Image 1 (cartoon, one colour):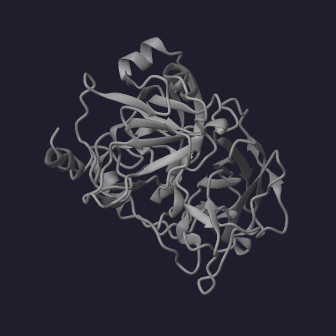
Image 2 (image 1 turned 180 degrees about the vertical axis):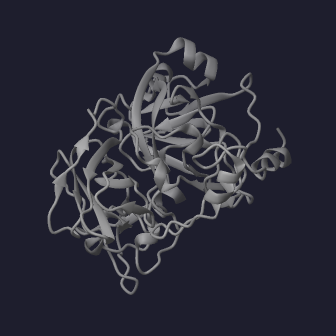
Length: 405
């Protein structure tokens, strides 16, 4: 498919709505502004996607609407999209595609997708993929970066092969300490740095995989087809898409996207002020404890004394969610929500539900907060400290509905 044809498809109004099933519903959804999230669902559908909140078409930047986050798995066609560089191949020839393993290895190898599927053990891991700048709009004052709302994240069941097994196939030289990953996205100018991420070899574990399937299907093109690096519990900047090169080194490389981007202040509060930026920084890495209400959304009307079931999701970096609690009195008191059985694993969403019956008319604020098995508790928004990149926001979520008699 040529680039012009690829994006021609992307500017065709989808035959189905953002969540519904008709073009009319899609148009109505596109005109709906979420009062808290302040984002519109687009009328435009990219290939293999339903209409999402669109920030850019080159590179594609698509956000999932809040109402999707009521179940443990995010549908592929509603899954958010984040690319960094503007040139993305619009055609992959699987007969020629391979991932190269090179550098400080005993045997430089090129592995085809067919070989990965037939000669390596297949494994699955369910994990949350979340941009480090998710909910960046909640930071005040405004920070740099894409002004994501709450939906720069999703959870999927990823299938592929262990990175450990691929490295074992190549064989590591003595002293090998780092592994770098690069994909097929390219910059317009040669002077622009490639989007390369590295991990320490001694931090590689069995759940880090090279995935070729997502929720039982081939990876969607915009989510990294045909092969993507999966590092559960870690923010998505390290999950390289269209993975084509794995480079083993004995020393850490100097890389723009490791040394300058996706970093936060290296201090106890991981914070700074606009007038006093931190001198030392560190990678964002592990995700913190978080939760989100998917239903209801702010602005809807509900009947007084009617049964309302609040639904949403909670997650962290792999310690596991312990509780989700709901408050309808602005945090004065909290009640436990019901969590799913957690069978998707520690890196996945825990879906929750909570039933309430509003007893009086007027404005009703619904808050949710999560805690994990490590003892970390989601903080109030007012307690979130600022950083100039707008990273790692995890303030207690809130939606506001109108109760009518």
